[in-house]
Image (cartoon, rainbow, N blue to C red; front, side, top):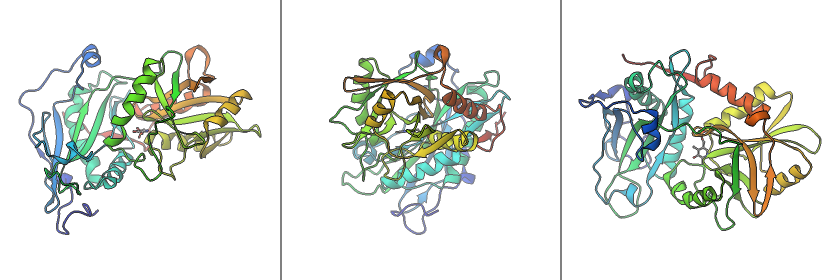
Length: 386
Ligand SMILES: *Cc1c(COP(=O)(O)O)cnc(C)c1O
């Protein structure tokens, strides 16, 4: 894999086999659940991976070292021009006491795509996967102990542009780092998730833009709308696009609806990837693949455009069966209500605040793979160092 268009031909690729280890001499205590929830800083594990890149030399040997601050000049390009992209995935402590990542090769490939979109150097996806495994091998035994099955850590690989030149250009220096920390479990809110459609004057993503890439520039600007929605009693924004109000994503999750089509057939529908408005979620892809494989005889599985008006029409004709949001952070979260400019759609869930049948099945199938209740090629075991 060529390091980047900006690099010289002799520049080195990222080589995970050159990883050096310098272990912390000041190991920290594992925080309690209460500390994790109340801390305004994400609590990270003892170690992180760091690798630096220059256009001339390519990637230096990656290092595993104690978690801690970086030193950057105030002119660094990530601090001015949003030269930043990232990934987010979880390491799950299984009921068989092994730790697994879920389809990490998908995240590794997506990081390449995101980096390429903003002229950052790409990293070989195989090397990235090995480096994620390396830091988890060292930190999981302590930070995700075997006696706590069902818990997870959050893994955040990041690439930033670090060249300190205020002229706008392709970064000539960059840093890859992989940190691991706690993220509170975001269970389904009581009564299901309530969505508010995006304000009329705001779009998250547009054709020709970068909404399909996990670049920091997509997220900061979405916070105002999300905060306002939250203050009005909603959990997340349902981002609409275009004059027809195409349904795209629900906050930082992909959006799914199960409904009956006019011909009576059940359909699981989500927005398509081809116009590059939405993030190609690993959870989204997995929901589609499992639904096709295991529900294909009862449910049509579609990636296509659908609008908020179609949702209202289906609701008026009692054709909406279920809806859910899918992503690493919220996992599979049932949606019970959509509010759009003064009108509401109430969406059925299962009895006693449980997910509907299809949502529940998909959630269980994925959870079983993540937590090792079923063996599946998507659940990749992390070899732990003792
Ligand atoms: C990360 C993300 C998702 C979910 O992707 P997963 O790979 O399933 O975690 C969906 N939408 C947006 C905008 C995201 O940033």
